[in-house]
Length: 113
Image 1 (cartoon, rainbow, N blue to C red):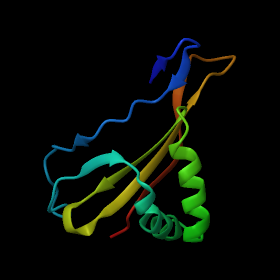
Image 2 (cartoon, rainbow, N blue to C red):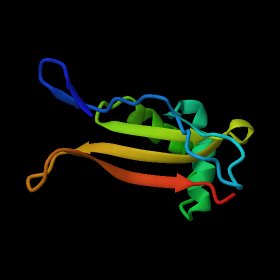
Image 3 (tube, helix red, strand yellow):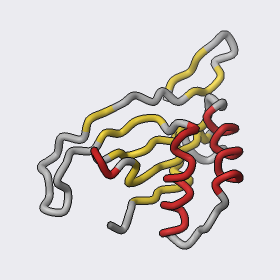
Image 4 (cartoon, helix red, strand yellow):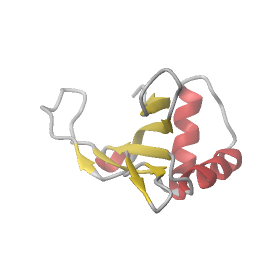
């Protein structure tokens, strides 16, 4: 996380990273981690349903659009080659009275397949 602008508003810098850890037998391809896009909404909704939190694609699209426009929120996806989006994580910039500023994980889903 970084501070930006004259008022030092919180912001989360999201960069695309390449997962280069040793591949596991069930993981035939490396993962690409990148910021979520509005076009990912259907995959994010399907993953949420796998976890037991069904959500309509339209509702998720609206929420995702709002979150992507905020500097204090980050939504990243994990993509596995031809399988497309296989996981997502949502984090938010938090500043608490009793603790230092941090990014709190608000949601994390990984495909069961």
